[in-house]
Length: 494
Ligand SMILES: CCCCCCCCCCCCC/C=C/[C@@H](O)[C@H](COP(=O)(O)O)NC(=O)CCCCC
Ligand SMILES: Nc1ncnc2c1ncn2[C@@H]1O[C@H](COP(=O)(O)OP(=O)(O)O)[C@@H](O)[C@H]1O
Ligand SMILES: [Ca+2]
Picture 1: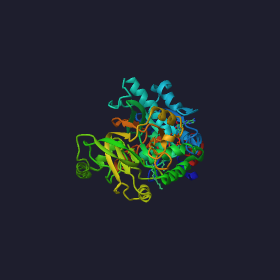
Picture 2: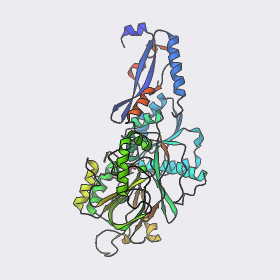
Picture 3: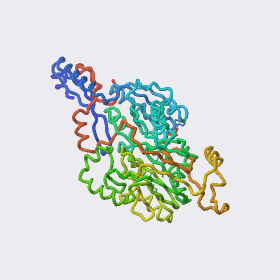
């Protein structure tokens, strides 16, 4: 700032605001306004503060859980250096808990946390950490509302508290698929401006007993085997997935069983659409009205058996249910690029036994513009519920052993115990956590959630933000010589 201006306009205040820098990446910038009179300056500051206070969607008090062991074990550093300064700048107060063991956050949320005092909870970690938060909050809400979690027929009661994710994990699929990028600063800014995005939740059951919730990927076969193998290599960090992915690809195991599913017939849109859900169901359809007729036609073609369950038997390399696109840095368009974030459905992808070469082609298409579903051995259905029953029954003792992480003889091919062909069972990859039960039933996909983040790729959203995009942190009406720090720093609280 030239000296002349400082002398002529000795009073000033600084407004911090959100700037979209590149694609989905957000940054915090600021602008300093100079005034001639202290009273005028004060009036501006007062008015802006009043406007900001009136924005009820913005959180004021947050409960933060940090997983210090997620991803590259950088959770605490990421929070302290990149996120906490922004929260302070936006006058958000926080209670921070660094987790001490797995399920610490889940159990604290489910039983102990005084949730009434918070406007939201935030997790710093990966998909597993987010899953802990979902389990804590969703379970607590169902318990408080008398919902029987064990029944796949029951619809979940929505939670009122929102969850924010600061990505610090290995895949960060939930963050990437909802925000469009896995960047801690961008996520912190979405939380600060009070963005919200509802999302679907599936409940997973075995013999009418509740097992887990899933919000992103439920994968049997390939993704189940990758996860089971990678858990033994956690010391490798995020690279464990590349190693185990390659190894699992080479083993090329298929699994026999029956998939039954209830197609979602009363919806517009199919998994083969070219549109992308980046702002949830409602916004997408507002923005793509011209696609609706086309989508309706596709639904009729895809789902001729509209009234009941469909049953498919076979040998599968992978059975994936994607309740959102599952986009992540490894696959920027995701497992099911057209899946919706909050439409009460999940996209069921069945990859039948095929050659290694064809499976590789299918996997590689997740990383390119080519359609991974346009292959004879792949089919995809948008469903409300589904079940999987493996061809061979899994005994309780086998399950107990698998739950304790031991490898079994019975996992080796039933027909030829001495050979190395496919084992009888895989396990399910449920948002990055292993489910040892092969037979599962997925209850109604419901939308009980709001996240503290969303895509803002639509022009409406951008305009809405630019109408009042700022969060203000200023020294009210200081003379210029007292606010020098403002000109050089913008995301550290002063
Ligand atoms: C030979 C070329 C292979 C290219 C394959 C590309 C396909 C990648 C699709 C990945 C979808 C990932 C869905 C998300 C799963 C996560 O929930 C889970 C746990 O994440 P986190 O808690 O952050 O660790 N991640 C995985 O299961 C990793 C799957 C990696 C598969 C290679
Ligand atoms: N303090 C802790 N010590 C050990 N495990 C933890 C701790 N806090 C959370 N976890 C568990 O770590 C697992 C992985 O967490 P996540 O944040 O998803 O990292 P990543 O993306 O690397 O898998 C989850 O199952 C979670 O329950
Ligand atoms: Ca969905």
